[in-house]
Length: 155
Image (tube, rainbow, N blue to C red):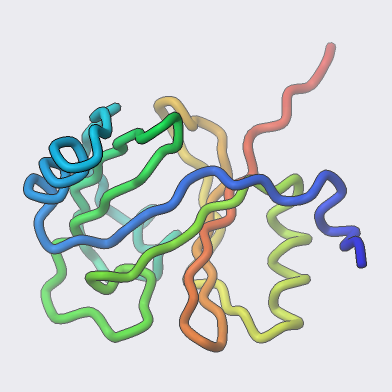
C-alpha cells in the first residue's frame, strides 16, 4: 500500500557501520574488496549528538565506495561504552534513505514504534550542505538514517 509520506518512495543513500578502528577498517574495505577511499573527516559537537543520539563525542569518518555504492565508516570516541542498540554502538550498521519530507516521515515512522535519536539537523557545509538528517531506531534495534536533500527553488 503506497505511503503518502513517500511520494516518490525512499531512495537508498548509503550504508554505514560503527567501527572500532577507522584506519584498519579502511584498509580492510580497500585491500579486501577493492573499495576506493572517497573522503575522510572528523565531526563533533551538538550537531552530531542531535543527529545520532551519541552524547558529547567526536567521530572520525570515512566514505569508501565499492561498485559505485557508498559505505560510511564511523569511529566514535565515547567516554563510556555505548549502550547496545544505539546507532553509535560498535558493530551497529545503519541504512540511510533520502526522503522528500523528513518531518512527515518522522511522524509516520513514530506510529510504528520507531524513535528519533535527537533532533533533525541541517548539514552546514560540504558535499551534502543543506541536507536535513536524523537517526531513528526501531523497536527491534534497527537503525535508519533519514536524509532530506535540499530542495532547489526555481526563481
